[in-house]
Amino acid sequence: MKYIESVKNPKVKAWKKLLTKKERDKSAQYLIEGFHLVEEALKEQVVLEVIVNQEMEMPASFKIEGTDVTYVKEEVMKAICDTETPQGIAAVCEQRTIAIEEIKLDKLLLLDRVQDPGNLGTMIRTADAAGMDAVILGEGCADPYNPKVIRATQGSLFHLPIIKAPLAEFIDKLTIPVYGTALENGIPFEQVEKAEAFALLLGNEGQGVAKELLAKTTKNLYIPIYGKSESLNVGIAAGILMYYLRK
Amino acid sequence: MKYIESVKNPKVKAWKKLLTKKERDKSAQYLIEGFHLVEEALKEQVVLEVIVNQEMEMPASFKIEGTDVTYVKEEVMKAICDTETPQGIAAVCEQRTIAIEEIKLDKLLLLDRVQDPGNLGTMIRTADAAGMDAVILGEGCADPYNPKVIRATQGSLFHLPIIKAPLAEFIDKLTIPVYGTALENGIPFEQVEKAEAFALLLGNEGQGVAKELLAKTTKNLYIPIYGKSESLNVGIAAGILMYYLRK
Image: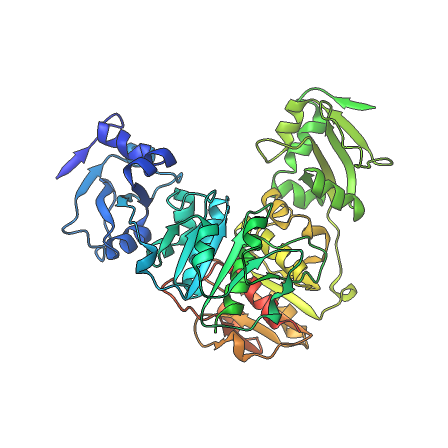
């Protein structure tokens, strides 16, 4: 049984580094926390090793046989986790690279510079629920392997491909209708017909979708505001549109 | 000109106390931060006094004439604000009590024990955008005057009545259709006809709507999950349903 007691152990330092984007990018690994996420990650076979608080009683239903497990002191768990009260289980996972050629491209969510981790995570979760085939992240989006994003996805990170790609070139190659979202020069979303294949493009929290991208879409949509608010949260807008557009 | 330098000034202590629910309930006051919110609150005439960081240059467009203004040192502003980098302006506002008899009751959002401040604030913002007439908060909801809720509403807190009421009795008195939300024993939302008057009921993040309330509704709806996620975020579900149901 592997056991680590000290937060100064080099292994612990290496795990802790995965809390930074730089290290995640370099190693192509990331950390996840909590039973639900570790369970989902094990199912998807992306787990490299599991880290368990030695004081924690493992639920009988939880299977980690055949996995590389290290038991640690509570302090170690706290040091490597992003949450204030970690559940007592974490895992190092590998980032999988999925080639665009390998995926079904019928229903896509394209995101341009979505920066808030909570928004990005929630949109990945909603895209999963709405049956989208993949989420395409343009440059300037939050890192999908950021712990806050992972938490907000509630496991959906493992359910559909999340692919980084330059959006302008990506849109140029698409043959399905691409719907941008914009407050100006758009049409109300309910004027668009529901379809079995479409790409929906949403943008930055403050600035929306870049003009260069809006110029490349089939149509640009807006969600009418019936009250006095100025706009909708981008995650809410994505939810309304994904569920409206799908046939 | 009123000026406060010390964080130990009794006035500062009183403002700071408004960061607690207990004091907000007792005083029927609350604190807001930032230009956008203060501007909206001034329009709605709920501002009792404005607090300004003396080092801040006030934008020329910003009008606070006729308002009770106190200038403070930056440390004071930091002490009374919930954000880490306050914008330099805050205000004490009064909680307005709105009698249910006074409001239009055509389109209502009813919330049962929604506890996350971000979710509650976002739902108020979306209810405003979707043209709802009021948001009714049952017992166990987050405090709508919590700074995190206010921030997430982006000013919508001032745009439509937010009323606390026991939901069971409230629903009993309604004559419009009431749609609950549930994963079991419900119908897919798209089977319901759009309407000019309806009440939509959403519930707690983990437990959903209480069974006693679901038993009182006209119909209970669910949003189909087409992918592998287990559920939608409650704020996203609210957005999809409010925009779907309205005629």
